[in-house]
Length: 178
Image (cartoon, rainbow, N blue to C red):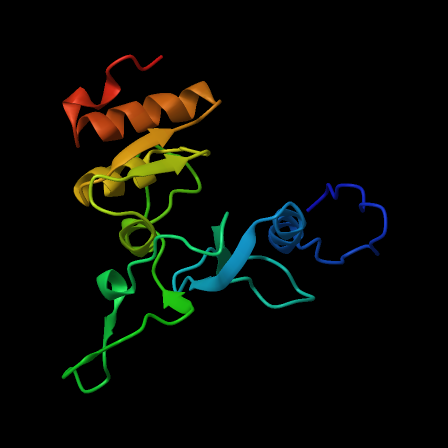
């Protein structure tokens, strides 16, 4: 790697910045309730050519609420027990492979990652907001699970990818879309 960005103030060179956790702490200070941190373990993560640390094979998902009382359907995401005879609460480490996207968006969420978030976090017929729509995976899963979705995306290339993918799910989705 021939380019290394400047080290942010307050950190040493090679320090992890911890952007996800900085955002989580900032949202808490702004009044949000941080209810859970979830580890997305990626068994098929991208290789890294680093030689002085381990390869990163996980990302964080954070569950926030704006109030103490909020919608959460734990039954919708329960997992089978080890013996297969019962069901247990979903755990905080989710082992889910990444999925390629032929349209070349580099950071597509796998549907299996999005599905439990939508099932637990919104009722059927509910509205899901995705402020970083990207390739539209959240919208696709929302529609597949009987929810509505509003997506926000600023990059024209990603908007076109999302439109193409979502049209395959629901042609009436783009009424009034710009």
